Length: 201
Image (cartoon, rainbow, N blue to C red; front, side, top):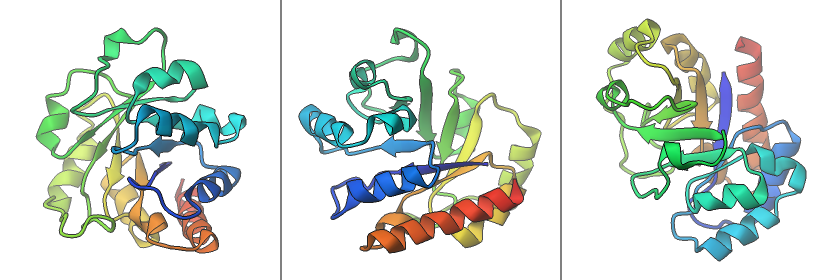
């Protein structure tokens, strides 16, 4: 199973330091999502990440920056200006979906797609899951799609086995990490999820 970390949408105290510590612990998929950032703020954030870890970063905005910073790839949003065929060379591409129907009607072979919220969101108050887990598991096991499916929303250490059993290809985490205000606590939460995934892979 893949383990993916998404940045907090707004800046947090010690966020960059936390991200670097988590990279040092083995993270290889990091989504930089800062919807209110300017392009200049995105660049400042990227420059603060050690060069050796930039190859693991997937950006949600200002996709043209992949050419300047040798990033892993881009995540498409409803506001994206890039279309899959416009890229100059092969990079990771992903997208978020909120229903099975959306994935079934997608025509582009993304490397993976997020499906959310699988559980009630930790980071977004009132953002609740409406999935039937039995129906979802049956659909995932049939694999009627070409992209890997990543569970997003309400993921913590205790959900990993259930998510694996349903047939997801990985998990994306956000609130479970960024709701902690201390770097050590954030790192502790990440390592607990990482260890759980390693034990069942």
